[in-house]
Every structure is written in C-alpha cells, then in structure tokens.
Image (cartoon, rainbow, N blue to C red; front, side, top):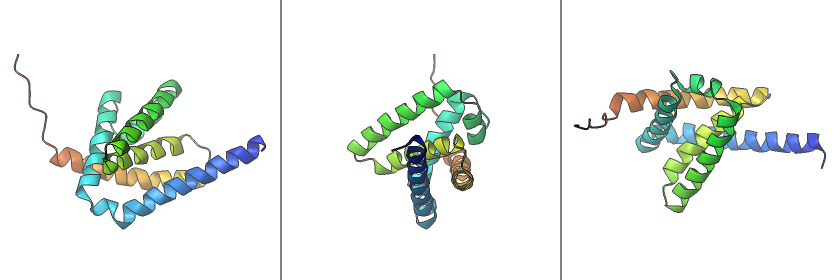
Length: 140
C-alpha cells in the first residue's frame, strides 16, 4: 500500500466513524440526558484543566505533544469504561476524540462533521454547567 492510499483509507475510516457518531447523536443521543451529561462533564473537565474558555478554544490551544498524550489517555480510559460496562461514558470520550482528531485534519468533509459534533458538544457543556451541582467545598 502506498502512503497516499494509507492516508485515504485513514480519512475514509475517520469519516465513517464521525458520521456514525453524528447519526447516533441526532437519532437518540441528544435526547439521552445521561449521555449528554457525561459528554458535557467530560468536556468541562478538559476545558477547565486546559484553562480554556470553551471546547473550540481548548482544541486550538492544545500543543501537538499534549494532543497525542490526550488521545492515548482517552483511548485508555475509554477501553476501561467499556470493560466496566460504562458504554455511555466511553461513547462520550469517543465523541471528544473524534472532534479532536477531525480538527487536525486537512479535509473539508471532516471539518463539516466536526462543526456539527462541536455544536452538540457545546450544547452538552451548557446543559452540564446549568444542571451540575458544584463540588462541595472542603473545610480546612
């Protein structure tokens, strides 16, 4: 296989994965309060740790080395969540990973899908921030 064929195959696979997640989210995911809460919570955790204002700001401000580490961490955590039977939480991480990876590709189709996915992610963040209970403050 040539390098171009390899790249084309990876892009096709990424497009298919992104399309599947978008299809799932539009068919049922956005109506699944638990799934949206998990997506929003995971996203807020990343945004806050990265010191960003929002998901797009987090993605654009993420250095390449941190990007690679984060994808490995998401993969590891996602696999553990699946092994623990926590499929919705794993799916939330998959959506974030797809958004991250799509943002770094030079592909118009992926960027369109990324925009749609980021709209869902932004809505989940807004709902999470609106409904999540703040962590109890610790007395010293």
